[in-house]
Image (cartoon, rainbow, N blue to C red):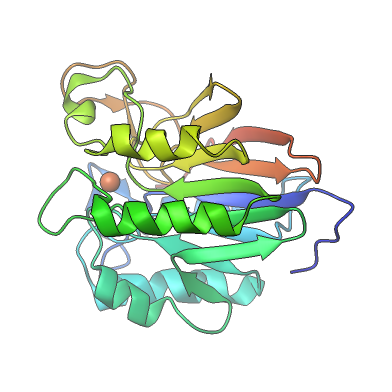
Length: 260
Ligand SMILES: [Fe+2]
């Protein structure tokens, strides 16, 4: 990565692309490949482009298809920017790891860049829409945080570990959120936790860290809704600037006028 120790690490988070085997397939009325490309075009016109890193926080495909993952890869590859992906409930982690590894692509794991360490967690549970870490992944998180003491840490995951105030969505959240926060709260070097899954933007402070959710590159969910409902908002993405002193600047950008 091109970032030096003296300037912020620029990260573009994209989430819930929900691509299909067919390029023109729709999900909830939206042509997800078209809106994904529109978000990428929009990002390229941003003053922060190019990012040092792109993180894609799950639900890369909607139909667990090889062609969907290949389309994601061929869409991102020309930029030559490192891309880290984590699985969502709609993904096939094995297929995803096979196709989205190698070259500029990394599946889960961690990255260390200057003063920052980024941890990419899988919260995938086979056959479930909800997420979970489980004992092994929680232990892995504990060990990783211990290994990165002295660094500022970003944790990325698909499922939301804090309630969104939306009954149906909070029913498919991270199940072992209490165990997750017990570990995070004991590690004061975690500066920011980012997630996808909820198809809406949010930002809040929890103790000394920032917790953010990021909109989808396709359709959005209506915040605060008891039952499933779509929001009219445009496709979006999130920029994060991770400063060497641990500060985090972040902003969601909406790709209005999408042709999806
Ligand atoms: Fe999801």
